Length: 106
Image 1 (cartoon, rainbow, N blue to C red):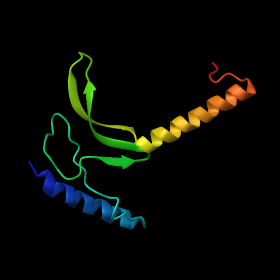
Image 2 (cartoon, one colour; image 1 turned 180 degrees about the vertical axis):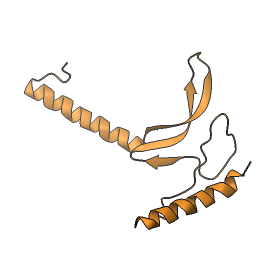
Image 3 (cartoon, one colour; image 1 turned 90 degrees about the horizontal axis):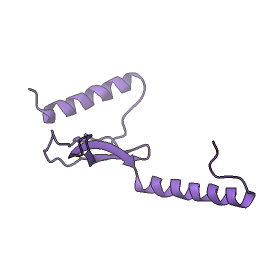
């Protein structure tokens, strides 16, 4: 089996070459190789999480259907995004109260 440490940079170079053909490029500071750590992949690497479109992807504890906990690599809203959404909901709630309209309608 080919080592991930060898394959990942090679794959990144191939992606860069393909994007260049389309007149695009990867951002050198934002593009990084991330290790998707979970119960099956337990190694330690410098980059084990990343932020994308308001979500943070990182190892998280989850519960399976039998109630057993395990580690999975999954997204959740970034802290800053959570605060902005909560502020927006509060503004909508206040606006609805002041106008006499119900906040939730079906």
